[in-house]
Length: 224
Image (cartoon, rainbow, N blue to C red; front, side):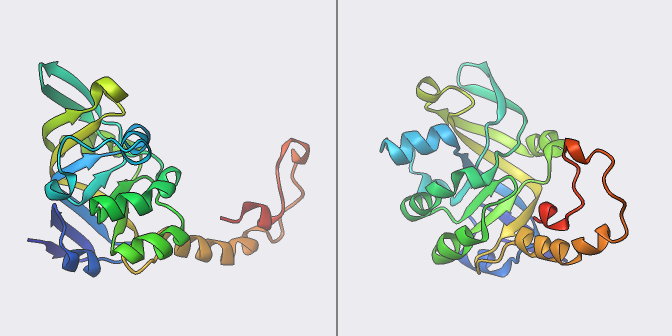
């Protein structure tokens, strides 16, 4: 059952279609329940090389976290994660059509999001959203939200950092809704506003003292 406080949403995983449709770019989300991690190793092993996961991910959850948990095996089959931080999401845009189509993923958690084109052409088509972590400083806070490590798969094949982790979360957040199910990107809209006003910041500035070392006085060079 979801809870809504202002622009903050508290969701249990798997997240329902109705809940996903309610959030908008710029909202904040907290997640509880099971999620699975997937980044370079898992994407290549599972999507490119065609190795079926040892657990039915679509039945487990519809939330995937692009992360290498800072975790260790404290005893046989028992793991502890001290920090959880995401990897840059734009690197994995190429895998999103297959991931969303074949595994029913509706919520992708990464860092800094993807392009607006990816949201319009892929996420919108599948009714999915993209959430972004809020910076490196929150890694330990995110880690504290891990209630349990259910299991870790493909450690031998991929190594512990690239493995497929199944995590049980308890209000992990805040996570920024970077791309909503209507194809809107929070960062794209913010960048448009910044770029509209950037020129005014250069007005009246003197020529750069260290221009020969790369300093610029042209606002178009700084556009986001």
